[in-house]
Image 1 (cartoon, helix red, strand yellow):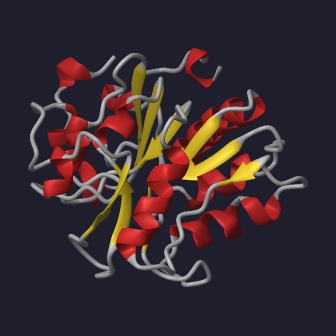
Image 2: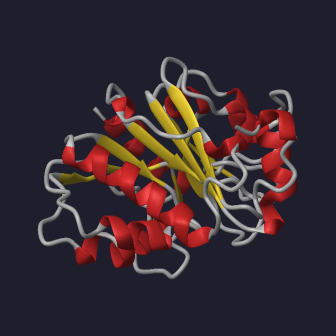
Image 3: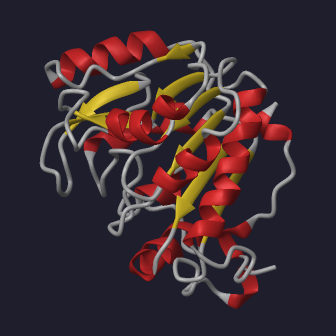
Length: 238
């Protein structure tokens, strides 16, 4: 299974991953392992994972199930859509499509889209959850001190935006994100260094949602470049 692959814990490993390209390559390898194993894989949005998806597209994904950790409530062809990002950089490049692609229906009313996604993913254990970290510490579409952080019953909910683009969202909840046996963060760039420090070197805090996402029964790995890791304490590096 994807959670069984041995990886360096680079959330505190300065120099293990030197730049954004190396970080993308490492995450692509993790995605490929999960896809080849027939795992249920939750992808992330934003700009950071694009290169990792491009690299991962060279491998077969026909056994994998593909999900999203969150989505903006826009049509699937909208440039702000997380689905569109994954389609252009990963799905459209595959020789054979995954066995199932579970898209959030972002074109619908946010509450309706969230209810449908919650119903679809409920009872499905994700094998790998890929996430980024926002400069404000948000993860998926769980923003600092948002009420959605306290949701414990549902797997997916609608959420108000905490930053641009200012459109409603659908997001997986903390319990759903944390039940995966392997949670992988991909974070690059100096602009994320403070958020990385607060997420991985500080205490769990609703002001930093990324600090709350840890695999409950498996492993949590952060793949960082030197810039993103620059403020981590030396004691945490190995």
